[in-house]
Length: 242
Image (cartoon, rainbow, N blue to C red; front, side, top):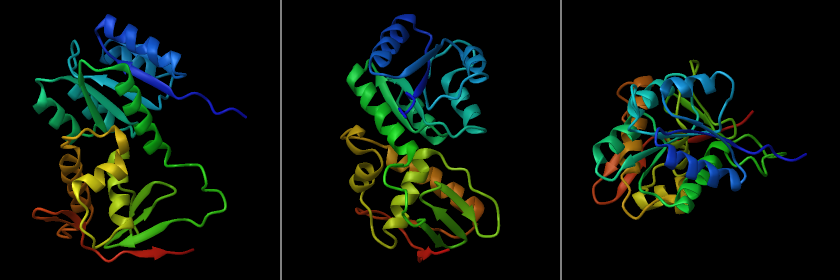
């Protein structure tokens, strides 16, 4: 049985950009829907469930940052934000409130395609090869992370909501506990070739992940910063069987 084509939702009010980008993505095999505003996006979300949302920051009425914040309250769909080169603070804030990646305008179609494919690969969690493999679950501090189910739970408690990027980052630490991971290593393992040579994504993700872990386990201080080195997970990690 053929795998259904991924569905993309592009929220962009510039008709020329949306026409060209959507046409390119459809030729690349994606089902691509376009909305010109927040209300138009909501109308589409009422009848489709996209695999990824491409979200412009400069929109009429409710802007992209507000939409991203609202989506993150109920959705874990990957979000790729678009912004002008001069809007660095918007890109930083966008990552802080839950976007998985950003792309600056003007952008080339091939770069857009690479970012989308990288985000979809991460969201799908490398489904191939999982059959007949044992569950990969690890416990640390008060948490249990399940790499196959892509879930993080507090022991004896509720699930902790993580974005795709946040989960991939934590998975890196779970696989390499008590080891200093450089920014380049983290970028390579979470973003692959889609990451640019100067990318603040890691620092933003670390900040977001720390807040969520601290919220579920106050005072744990699980992720340490190593000066001129990178970051490491300080907790003991053990594999959970059964």
